[in-house]
Amino acid sequence: MANLADLLARNDSLKNRQEAREQAWRQQLYAMHPVIEQLEARKRTLLVDQLQEILRQPSQKDAIKARVSEQVQEIEVQLMDYKQQHGIREYVRDEICPLCGGSGYVQGVLCTCIREQAYVEVLGSQDFLVMPGSFAEYNDAIFGNNDVQRQRTRGIRLFLQDYAKKYPHSDKKQMLMTGQAGLGKSFLLHALLKELYQKEQDICCISAGRLFDYFHQHRLGEGYAIDLIYEAKILAIDDLGSEPMTANVTREYFFELLCRRAENGLYTIMVTNHSDLALKERYTERTYSRMVSVKDSHVLRFEGDDLRLSLT
Ligand SMILES: [Zn+2]
Image 1: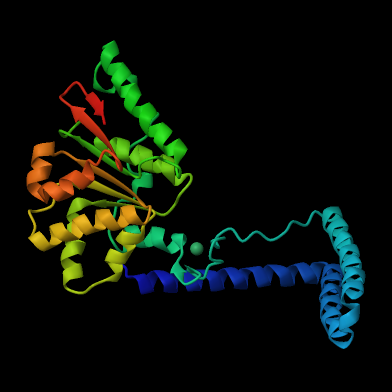
Image 2 (image 1 turned 180 degrees about the vertical axis):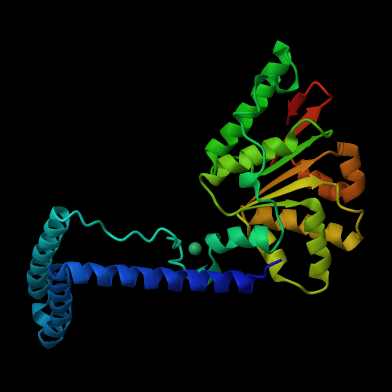
């Protein structure tokens, strides 16, 4: 598996490649259209001269700026006309992230473009964008053909679609989907995340097995992976309870994770096959209360094989 340094190095070389490509494109353009090079050079000269002129005559600053801006605009119009006449389009930097300009960091914080890759390639979390799950497919007759079931299925779908629509202004930032296996909870989770992804790309969807692995590692002092999990704008934990029964200390970490994310206004979505009673036994009363908190958490209970949804 990759580490964070690998991703940043790959990002750097991508940026360099892009810059080299853009430079080559520009040189070719200048060779074919010297007029463009001349006009752009004149524009640069005007702006440099302007600076020097202002330094010499600070009191004339506004007048100088107004005059130069007019001259620059004239050149830009000429450039535009020329490019239009010759069908020349602007260079498109399609592979460079607009948030960080390819540096990988925004104000010292790891950019979403790197985080996204790190979740999958460093943490081994789920690449939910390519996993099965969509609201369009979760439809009408998925669990049977009678009207009641159809209505229930539709109800869940509408609730989750509405939740995604309200993001990031949802009233509750935590969600728990509980119920026995085989009712399409993970399918729905992925459908929801895909919808949320339209608005927020900083999403980590990790299996509980991996999450608790990282809790163990954290204890051993490997910090940055756990930081990613703590900081993800949206954290989805799939199959909670499938991890091996763990030491008390990792259950403490789990509790702390939920608290800290809530305090920081981050979204946490959990999916589990366990019943309320089993969750309580497994994670302690205190953590369970946090998971089903009426104030902070939407709880979707998928009950029985006919998909009875109880929403609290
Ligand atoms: Zn970026």
